[in-house]
Length: 337
Image (cartoon, rainbow, N blue to C red; front, side, top):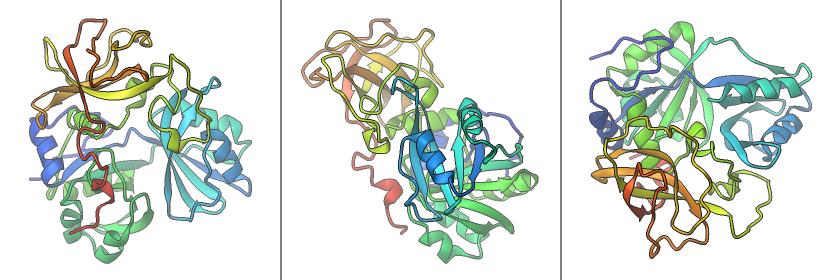
């Protein structure tokens, strides 16, 4: 049954977060990510500007491709993450959930950067049945199915032209649909008739299970791309010292089950083997436990060293594989069946 669309509300859940997680892992879930903002970079020097901004090569990208990238502070630590969408050789779009990113980019752009008004909505259709769920609404199913991971194209969904990207934030195969805000309510109604509307509680535990960072949680502690396990997405050089950190996944006990959890005070960087700085946590039905993401000293042997949270919020900590779900990280890249 379609659920009405609310603009621009950040909805925590639609009544049953566990069912929403289940829908994403086994069927198809629908998320509203319209909080993400866009900037357009145009002109003959657009690639140079984008590369300077994200410290990652984009000039050789083919039009119609997307690149994940990091925004760094002056000291080389990660401020946020974002995506770069190449429209043509002299036209890029930057998408970020961190508005200061785009303001900083505009200040660098010397008139070549524009910040479009909030005239678009972004819907994520995620899960192994995402293509199946969109197919009845799409007259270009072959083009939709042919999109490879981190490619995008304009495709008509439910008589609405959408910029469709083959990516997502769940660890599952799926799409992100960018649509004019005036068409958002109509498209949401169509999508919610074939996909399970899902909120940010489900999105949070899905991305923790998949090992994906959330910038205001996992980059709040000053860490380098290397420490965050994201060296592949930055040209910044890694330097290793005895105090270098690494990101881990863990299970733990808590007095209350965390939902959309965030630390009350910024955790300190760990200074002793086994000490953890917890940055994300949620209850995973798949693990039947609270699981989370944290940083430890890179020299810590997490298999043999007892882990402890100095704040006392998390107890009985045990290391889990990172990512906890889909350890090969193959699901988003899998061929449609």
